[in-house]
Amino acid sequence: MDAARREKREHGTQAFPFQIYPALDGSEADDSDFIPYHWHPELEIITVDAGHVSLTIADHVYEGEHGDVFFAAGEELHEIRAAGRENQFRSFVFAADFLQFARADQVETELLAPLAEGRLRFATSLRAGEDGQREVRALLAQIVRACLARAPGYQLAVKAALLGIVAVCAQVGLLTGKRVRPGADYKARQLKEIVGYLGAHFTEPLSLTAVAAHFGLSPQYFSSFFRENFGRTFTQHINSLRIEQAARLLRESDLPVMEVGFNVGFDNFSYFIKRFRAVYGVSPSNYRKNSLA
Image 1 (tube, rainbow, N blue to C red):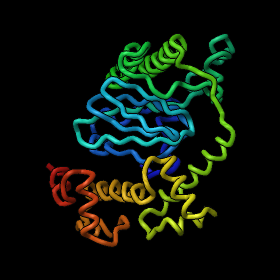
Image 2: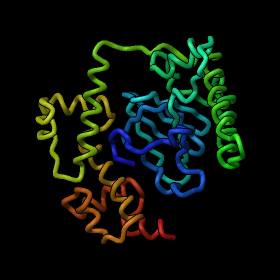
Image 3: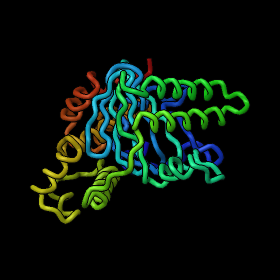
Image 4: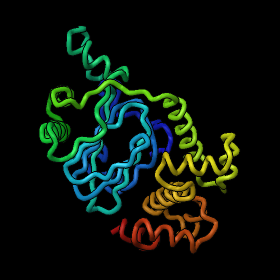
């Protein structure tokens, strides 16, 4: 995934704009423990399938448990953390207009068009045991089975189940008009610019003072603004991006461990090992050995 920026990948195809992550064939099983801040125009439904998953959606942090369902709106910043194989999640990403009808019936005008245009949105969280949760999970399970079987017409089965989710959410009051707070659009744009800039430059030497100056802000204001909206300090965020990229390089390249640390932006090898161990519980060398096992 393109770290912390608007995704450039296409979710599904033009003919079938729907994708499940991690891939159902297991090819991405080791690539889904940390999905850094990103956004895309498509809607995303995230399920917690095992253990504990931490999500940040917009400016709120959610601690998800097995059975919980979360919704990220189009263009909404979000991040997913599920350290360890005992913590599992799945994402269903699809274009909102994929659900629309050619004929402007009541469902189209009252639900599907407003959803596609951003005037209507899913509530962000649906916890285990809440009204509609069991039905939504069952419909998502139908989607997984259809995508695994890939029988003729499975795309229609996926679309029908997604429409079923819209119906369930409408029935239990989980579809609401988008609330826009004063200054929210400007703040969202600023957050996206910061996330995009850091995602593009995190391997370079970065200081809070220099980044704050880049955005025309004082270091004090930038530090407070960052912690308030991202739930962590500037340094913690940069380290997270670097560690995530380091883990990817350890899995996918033969670069020496020391070179991996330097490539992702750490200028102190001991500090790199310390930060990596704090996230993954093992040294970079042992992480590489375990990923190859």
